[in-house]
Image (cartoon, rainbow, N blue to C red; front, top):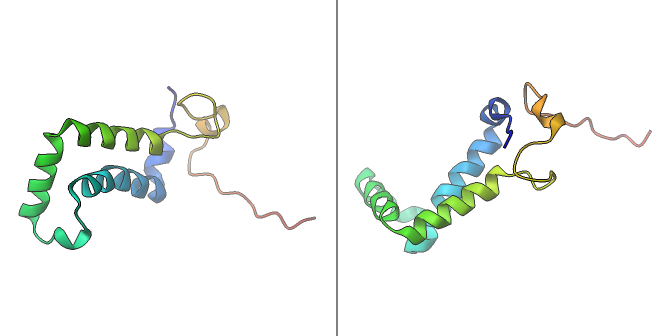
Length: 97
C-alpha cells in the first residue's frame, strides 16, 4: 500500500475528510448533534463511550478506510503519478482550445 502521505498531510481537504470520517459515525450512532457537544467533558464522555463500543469502532474504521482510498486507482494505494507529487496536484482549467 503505497500512499503519498507527505502530500496528503499538506492537503486541508484530506484533514477535513479524516475529521468527518471519525466524528460523524460517532455522532450518528449516539444520535447526537453538534449542539450536544457544548463542554469538553461531554466530548470526552462520547469519545470514551465510542472507543468502548465495537460497532462504533468498526464504523469509524470503515469510514476512515473509505476516505483514505482513491477510488480512481486499482487497489488501496495511490497511482504511480500521485506518488510523484510534492504538493497536492492542481488541474489547469480546460479552456476548450
